[in-house]
Image (spheres, rainbow, N blue to C red):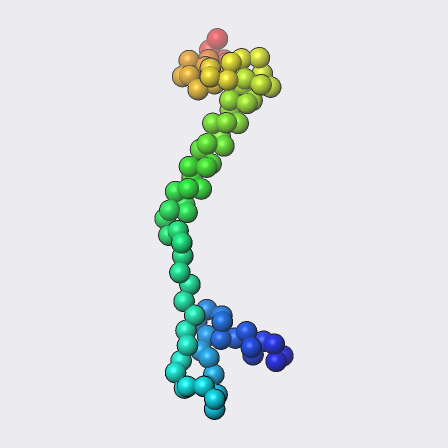
Length: 88
């Protein structure tokens, strides 16, 4: 229990209890982010798109018998859509 009292001033929004030896000023712990949240979301979205593109290229080029660069062409996707819809 004593260990929790020692950690309490370092928690977000916690006030430090004044003691006889220390000043009676309140100490606040403030978190400073290196990257803002909007930048984190943008990085995660970019990594997700990159992972999808690499996955399609590996699936089509390495696992399948096509060229990895062909997986990014519209004609390939149009052919896949035509096969799925039963047009060809």
